[in-house]
Image (cartoon, rainbow, N blue to C red; front, side, top):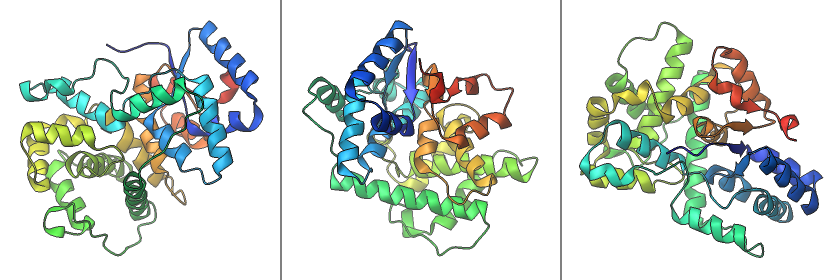
Length: 312
């Protein structure tokens, strides 16, 4: 069951609040939001970005703002939302336990956030392994972005997660041949579609994501370990992910970044974008999000994206 009246802040908004507000101001902002029925909730992607802040004092300031502004619940990891969608859309007895009761997280990170939010003297940390995984993902995203936005050839990125240690180029080509159902009408649509395929390939099939636990649980329940066999299963059983669900938003925004010829793509922005269907208001001062909404004026869900000027 979806929980209503949730408000999502892009991490840049938390950073701004930490720069211009003291704790009294933050507490008053929370009171004003609650009086209007709005409940600010963080996400694991917010946590990742905050922990990536190099200035230790400012990082702690942002965490303190979140502790005083946000609800004790945290949104589920993007990967858990993907698996929830699959397990709900294509139900199987062995994956029924992966269906979420609502859009809130139930992982160790969710429990940690609840504790940190309750005890203002505590802080947040990530393991070295998690941080290293995130750096790999950012590199991978940067590779895709350059590949599509500039058309430059880059050295193959070899990843042992892919069966046979094929290059990422070969995996992309194989996935595109296997998962694309029809020819896109133009190059722009082709890039958007291919980026959805890339998300299926890298996140769902290869498990290359910040929080792969739900994905690992899904494939364990299905009984498929090899990445190439996951490709085959995705082609046959999960083709609906190219038409609906969380991967649509994730891949579309990633593809849009590339079609704009931006100097760089932002991996975190793509992950943030996945939360849009799960909240009532998405607050960001990142102009790229607002530029994206202008390209799809007919979309009602994009109306949820506002600037921090909309805060009471």
